[in-house]
Amino acid sequence: MTTPVLPEGPTRRGTELLLLAFALGISLVAYTAVGLAADGQVPSGTLGYGAGLGALFLVAHLAVRLLAPYADPLIVPCVALLNGLGLVLIRRLDFADAEQARNAGRAVPSGDAPLQLVWTALGIAAFCLVLLVVRDHTRLARYAYTSGALGVGLLLLPLLPVVGQTVNGARLWVRLGPVQVQPSEAAKVLLMVFFAAYLVSKRDVLSLASRRVAGLDLPRGRDLGPVLLAWGASLSVLVFQRDLGSSLLFFGLFIVMLYVATERTSWLLIGLGLFVGGAFLAWTTFSHVQQRVDIWLHPFDDPGGDGFQLVQSLFGLGTGGLTGTGLGQGSPDNVPFAKTDFILATVGEEMGLVGVMAVLLLFALVVERGLRTALTCRDSFGKLLATGLSFALTLQVFVIVGGVTGLIPLTGVTLPWLSYGGSSVVANWALVALLLRISDAARRPSPAPVTPGVARAALEDAPTTVVRRP
Image: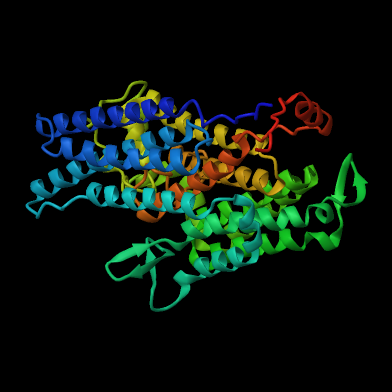
């Protein structure tokens, strides 16, 4: 009798390593191009930058190979390339800041790219820690309400009078000594775990219909409580923290996960109606929302004042054209907050439409592989959590790209891995780790069941060894 042997591991880890090397090579070429454009020579720290970034990518690869060997091999290389390009763009804007300081006779600032590299290291450390601690994603469902309570607590943390900080009109930050962090980034991941566990446990109740109207099965009135609660919570974030982006992100995420869990189109329509109603209420009530809508609709009415940021962004995108001005050869520093909210304007000006589409394609690949993971996952909680993680990235990218290009009002959400910001980098690397954990479980081959008849026949055909007594 022969015992069936399972595969020893994934066969495409070599492909992932090659793709990571490709991502590192692209990042180094871009970094060198920025230095040549700025100083006419290869930056002195290129080898150190490449060695440090390569070591971080290798650590991420080894963590996946050892802790989640069956996970999707394309997600980490795409994220690594986005992170590497983000570091290059921030370094390019550092050069612009240094040139402005020299022209004005001020001291040259130290730059933000080295600090962003440190945050990248912390993000990959969080990535490895999540893979190490979360060995079975289904166990996260046991801590649903704990995750929800921690997520809400982190959202409320910036409102505390001592540690909370207001930056650019939004109260989103918490100061921990010399470091400012944005707790809503970690709250995003925790609330997705809560949403997935809650909706899986309440799916049968939320799927019940009270009546059918115009071909839609409307939910019962008593089941509207969770949606109204999420709607009220998102409005509270908008009112007290003046954060339009997080408000839209959390409510949209809950509605989409609710629709995926129940497969009821009526929930989407109810969520859309509540969103329109909440947006109208916010526009008529809050001055900062009115200001953002006015800037969106009429940016050129005040191009040197309130509309300056959006107008400069549109000029930069128009200047870039199809192929861009070249890395280091544009003027993206004319856009205020180019390193954070408007990093895509830098991509559009110096890399052109081709560069913007390449970046969006990388995000689309990550989301597509995440949704593929959701389709192949064997448990409902994993399916819903993978869907939520993927859609969170989708909504973030849509909101920031739409704001920069004038499609929707500006919301202040960072572009994952590209924008400057430590909280965002660390939280999004942890998000990817959860997605890979679910992917590993979904792609892991299950042992083939052995039927009793086959087992009995195998035992009967096995050779018999006769042992004689001495």
